[in-house]
Image (cartoon, rainbow, N blue to C red):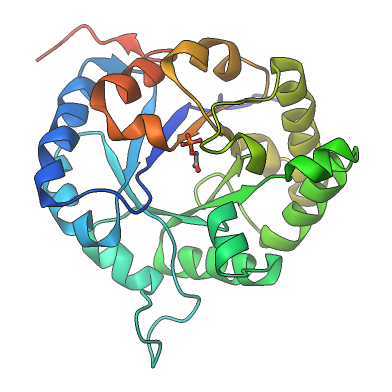
Length: 258
Ligand code: PGA
């Protein structure tokens, strides 16, 4: 059986950061991306910048993602955005179930699955986030928690084109603390196995990102772990130099620079 290798993806989650003036920093990322081959780069800006960034990335390999979507395609949902709207604004992916939304917006696994299905309906790839809290890890429940989140949040029939999983231990997000490479290997192997038993061969092609305090200084040791197919980067994605340094862990310098 010939297995297509998973192409690494380094995605930047800008969270609630960025104004129109940030287009200059984004353009530096687009410029730098021209010099990297063998890795997909994506920036997920706040929704207010989607159209602007999509225009700036046009004709380049840099992908644009959104940070959340509503499950319905349209309707009376003041303040929400549908997956169709995000696609229309230039996104090709959307993060769903980020721990900040699971905690401050009380999103359940069922909500996250509905959003992932909405993404698929609109032709977007859903980046489904899972991860345990510090207390859950200390109680040796990390695998059980992540397994339950995966089972509840990943829709049936998911394939590599419409699903990416991001493992983000809640205690590592924005804290500067990361799991050891061995811990990352264990949980990513577990996620890979769980996706395989649920989705069969398709589960092998789905990319599993690591997220939580990824920086240029730790990218090499975290992102070359088995079954780590890239990173979801928060704080360090706001600076082009740092984001590109992380991505360069995978990227070969392309020959035709320019
Ligand atoms: P961080 O955030 O890289 O700032 O820890 C990661 C995330 O929340 O996706």
